[in-house]
Amino acid sequence: MNRRQFVGHVGALGVAAGITAAAAAGADEFDPVEQPIAELVRAQVQGRTSSLALVHRYLERIARYDRAGPMLRTVLALNPDAEAAASALDAQRRAGKLRGPLHGVPLLLKDNIETLDPLPTTAGSLALAASRHTADAPVAARLRAAGAVVLGKANLSEWANFRSTHSISGWSGVGGQTRCPYDPLRDPSGSSAGSCAGTAANLCAAALGSETDGSILAPASINGVVGLKPTVGLVSGEGVVPISRRQDTTGPVTRTVADAAALIGVMAQPTARWDGVGTLDLAPKGLRLGVLAPPESAHPQVVRQAQDWFRLLEREGFVLVDVKPPAGWTSLSDDELEVLLYDFKADINSYLARLAGTVQSRTLTDLIAFNNSHADTEMPLFGQELFEQAQAKGDRSESRYQQQLRRINETADSSGLAALFERHRVAALVAPGNGPAELIDNVWGDHAENSGGWPTMGSAAAVAGYPSLTVPAGFVAGLPVGIHFVAPRWHDGRLLQIGRAFERARGARRPPKL
Image (cartoon, rainbow, N blue to C red; front, side, top):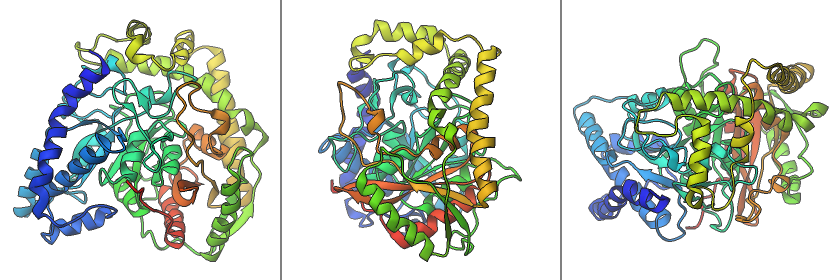
């Protein structure tokens, strides 16, 4: 089955429902565009809208902007059970039986997160087109238990951008090319491209993404939304297609910090180590923030605007101190890749082995063979060098892996982030985020040397498992750019308070003109 056939098979029912549902929703005057989750819930409580009406509104926008118009292609597949689920939640509300703080709120989930809906979980690959599941991943189950409606699956960079060194962010064999809603000619970044672009375009109330290194923060920054990469371990990774169980995590993609807090409050596993989500607007005055200078690859206008962002934080009562990144961070990405190749081989083989018999590819070797035999649909633009490099690795008992793992942990954590937090007595680190978006390049793929200034602290936080957050901060030539924050492990709540203070003062979020 080729990509066009697959998308038509999975998405046809949902698209038709979206088009016909738009007319049925005409009598509902509530417009969910740019509305925070709290308002979506309040409108349902007050009878100004319903969960079913919200689903209809989002389906209509998906039909108008994702399948037609700018053809954003952020939604890989729509859930044919979404309307029935919303109707059931409306009935429960009328009966006074509320499931939780997300009752009736429609969400998109990145298509590497398993759900029990009649949808495959493909990681964007046609090799997993037949992958169905009889249970939700724990993180999806927690959202559903809190009342969320799974509207559909978001497109992503295939295999979460871990297939080729020349990949194009936002492209998958199943979903095609996701586009930046601020300029459809531009790369939405990845790998959570659909989650971030879809949220930015108001095709859902919010979305879930996942990150191994940069896959939430980078596309969130470039698409003008809030992205939280939680402390690794705060959210269950079971039932999520892996790159590295040691480093992967799912996280919320939203339009406001408050919405990110609402989602992580539901997604988080119970643990006494986490500081929780407190009152967002009560970040203590006098908190020290360590400022890292923009990398040399940062856009000149981002460098200039960043000075205004830092002054704004000072006016909000934060104390800013300049810090220098450790020298070892310059080689961290290369050393990290060596470790991830071992991790991916082991973890993807374990994941594939547990899938139902309808999936023929049960090992990394099988995936490589599948891509070779379906090169016209799976590899029309770039290859699978990372798959092949990972397959050439041994297992994680090898001394090479153990040495490299110790090296990146020391570089990122003990001699890196932990040392900076202790030496400078800061509550968080702050740096300009990446962006603006580059043009989609089907010849060369993503331009690593022109990625809009990815801050090295972002990779350090990914390797060390620290929480990180991006918040909309400004625009360059009409394209969004964000500001990034990193806090110590389990201080996700404090990180959200800091991000909320910046968001409140800056107010930079602006929807795309679709």
